[in-house]
Image 1 (cartoon, rainbow, N blue to C red):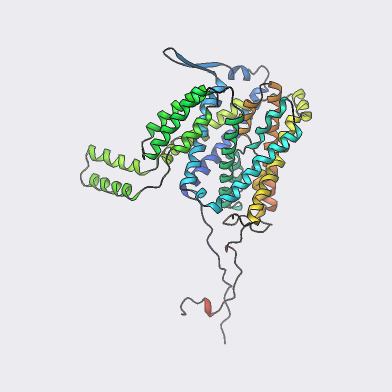
Image 2: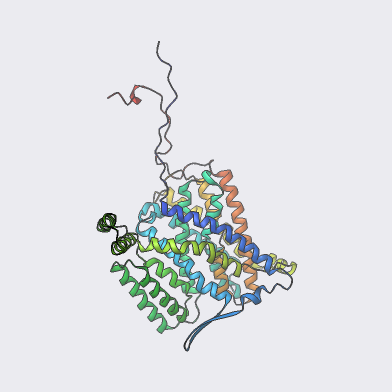
Length: 457
């Protein structure tokens, strides 16, 4: 009597997992998002307390003096111009690492998020200009172009295993490209009068950084010192000084460890174990430190500072908007507020979804793993959470306090709507639409038979 067939086997291809450095990056961003949300709520409460003195506090001046040289800024500009340079430095470090040794090395993996990011940059700006085609409000077209990586990753963290890792990677890559576009827009369109002399000094310092990278200098001190000088030069040039952070981050080397470096670590490590001496300990420590790319060491030091201190401090300094009845009534009828909400929600949702879908359907790129079109739509809506850089550009774009407050209300409202709609889309559509790329990770089941018996030749 023939044996009863066993359970039908399922053939599957393992889904790729994220690299450990990228997992650490995402974990830090998720924790930072909670602090940023808390700081934002605190800023709103503080600004709306009777006699709170919120604006007076952030307009208090602080200065640094060295001999006859002095740098004087109010507290808000110390946060926005100086502390936020650390945030943009971390962005630049992540861009450099992903391009050098990360996911951005693979052209086909890059095409979809890059085209999605371009759609998420262009359509929001066009929609905003459609609502505000002229006048003082038109200059705010750059506000809805950015995606807040910290909030985006924080919302995705709420979905746990329901949200595939490869969607996180797609959205992180998209956010990186988006940050490049937003920083470019800030440097080109939102800079004050430019000093050509200071720009020349800045270019020379960038050349020094490039030379350090080319020479393979692994110590962090030269990059940090040149970076500080670059910040001062860019600040003096009239271009927003946070651009210096991005330039330093991009130029800090992120190359893989060479075989010679590995062998040096083994040699000095064995020597230290054979006869521990202070000299051998210093040599082994130096060899071990040199074997870790400068990019990783600097990001390991600065990313927690950026996520847990700088970005929440930025939210506390910039998200405080008076939300009394008059301000809300003005915002409801304001084309600035309406244009920003429309651009963040519809511009990002439609722009990213359509551009990424075109790249997928035409075969220009693919999304490995279990990313479905439902995930893509939900992620595109979440990309409308344009908090940090949107508020940053708001401060640069508008000198008029009323327009600035209307824009901030639009950023807060648009980001909230995007977060809710994106979360609902991931819950409702996430697993109910086809895979973006059918790459073998869901093959049909095959009946049991002797051809599946590994003992048979």
